[in-house]
Length: 278
Image 1 (cartoon, rainbow, N blue to C red):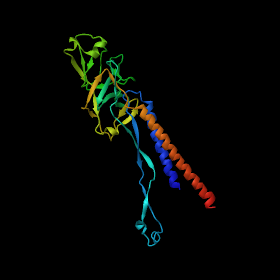
Image 2: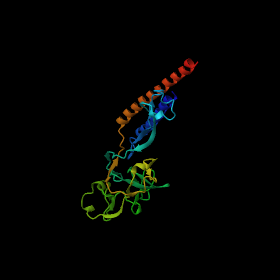
Image 3: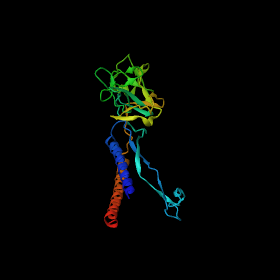
Image 4: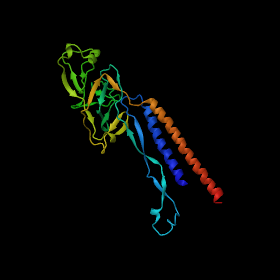
């Protein structure tokens, strides 16, 4: 009787964790580079049900319980195993802003924060007053040579992440995106964006604001190879709002079913105590 209450309560707790993940996905659906989370459940081991007092088995001799006929199995509930992040590619949105960068394929930009190096897919960058390429909250973006310094009207970034400048002529901002004409015939490579990957990407942890950090399980950051950089684009989140809303309705129905299970067992237990045992 109490087992049914515990099983239903575990189901409610699991659905609550799933709802938290869905709500977080919906809240960040418009966040550049956001990756959706999925709550993954793990079932407790099923318990075998056996017939008791069948031809005297289970009474004598001692230790004969294992020979009793098996009736079937009963579930003992579920628990949240992990909140898994899906790193599927999000759609690219053209912005025509040369400071906006998007990654196609695997990899993360490297950002220097007060807590050390962090990693992001959010390429909505800007240049501060000192000419440093930074995130929207002021954290410097790192290249292979360290902090990246740029001029608004005299740089381009190719698909390999190489930063090229033209020292011969000052370009209009619109020319940075098109990169046509003789002005860019002999560009100079001054640095390259640090784009990293992880051996076990599943184990990196979110820190909020589209930032990730490495963990002992994920291993250290390594140079990414399967990527291309798209200048003038941003990667949108991989959240499908319609799908998340459908999942939210499913969670609500599952929660209500578990809730009714707990209520039914509670009523039955109350009847047993107040009417049968009395």
